[in-house]
Amino acid sequence: MKLDQLRAFVAVVETGSFRAAAEAIHKTQPSVSAAVKALEAQYDFALFDRDSYRPTLTADGRAFFKQSKKLLYQANQLENFGHNLAKSAEQPLRLCVSQMALTDQVVGLLKQFQQQHEQVSLELTTDHLHGVQDHLIKEKSDIAIGPSYGLDDRHVFIEIGALDLVCVVHPKLLPTLQQGHQKVKPQALYSLPHILVSQDADNQGHRFLLPAGKRWYVNDFQVKKTLIQAGLGWARMPYYMVRDALEEGRLVRMDVENFISHNQTPLYMIRLRQQALNHEANLFWRFMKQALKRPIIEP
Image 1 (cartoon, rainbow, N blue to C red):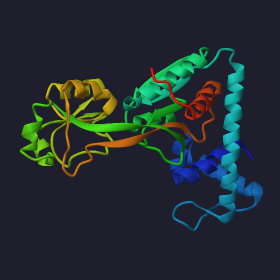
Image 2 (cartoon, rainbow, N blue to C red; image 1 turned 45 degrees about the vertical axis):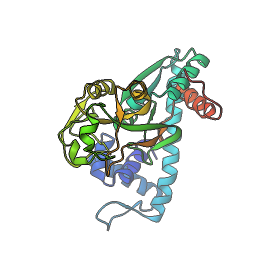
Image 3 (cartoon, rainbow, N blue to C red; image 1 turned 45 degrees about the horizontal axis):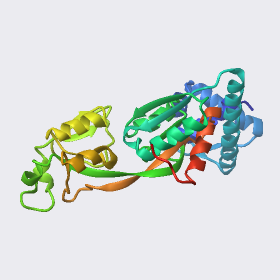
Image 4 (cartoon, helix red, strand yellow; image 1 turned 90 degrees about the vertical axis):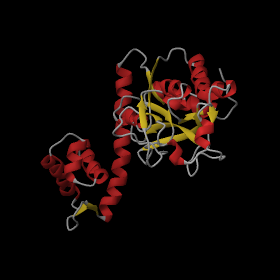
């Protein structure tokens, strides 16, 4: 039995086909098939039911798959441990944070970690929506912080806080939009751009959209806030980002009929289940879990 054979077998199970497995692990389809057959020949039992259209695990195959996942996880941990031992210098902590998740609480936690572990350098990147989890999948980051976009059984995640989201608009626009009503009807917003943060306008992944109307896409929340304050559109924003503008009257909250204008969404610390963390990432993960058990000192 070889680890490459186990990786091929697990890839077939997780992707649902030999062809998809070959693409996922960058092998040819014949080599994936040969790896699975070699395992079956070595242990003299069938891993898959060949009568099904798609690869379906046999009872023995399900048991073997469960143990294979455990072994591969341990092998990945050992490989990362060996790499860390081979390098004399500390590795940076690669952290990806959702653009909307840099709350006072999260920044306070980062500050506390830096004060307690001055030797750890940080590579901090930001992204939005599913892009945060993509950093983990593409191994660009060790740990991510953000909402639940893209989370599934590939991830381990711990709730670390919550984010208040509010619908805001320029105060001079609100009376016209309300048309004498307490709530704004969706049709009244169709001519006013809904401003959204997105890296790719063709694949936004936004959950809260009106069925019609203008949409403008920008790269970050600061641009989004600036446009709304100029009266060029409306949007849902993290409350902590617009708190000053609301208090000073540069923006006002808005309730839209049949639309989630205000809500609270959890924030999570996230890592890949099958990816072993290096020493620095483990330090951060353990620190965050411990810090959440005591009051957070905000900056």
